[in-house]
Each structure stands twice: as C-alpha cells, then as structure tokens.
Amino acid sequence: MKLREEFKSPDLVLLKVATKEKEKDLIKYKKEHHISFPILFEEDAAVATAYGVWNR
Image (cartoon, one colour):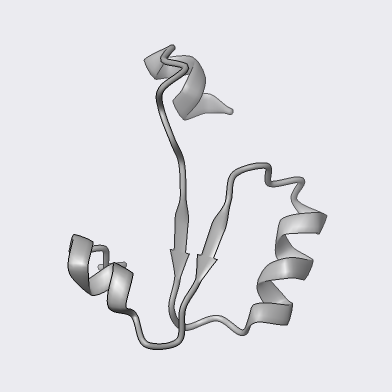
C-alpha cells in the first residue's frame, strides 16, 4: 500500500469511514479491490462527525 510504504511506520492505521454507501456494496468493493484495512460503516455519521472526516 503506497501510504504505508511512504510513511514506513508499523503504527500507521488506515481506516475508511463510510457514511453514504450501502454496507453490502462496501463488502463487495472491499473484496473486489483486495482492501486489507478496516472499513467503518455507520449510518448516522457519528464517528465521521466526531473526527471531522468528510469527503470534500
């Protein structure tokens, strides 16, 4: 993964916060693209709001 290689830190944690996608679509996307990092699915966007995570 490019980010992990660039920062070269075992402590780097990647996490996708999904608020608009459907859960079944995320599962399919993760499998098709061999994504190994966690995807947090949330309908109410509480975590995204708490951390200020928004797609702009």
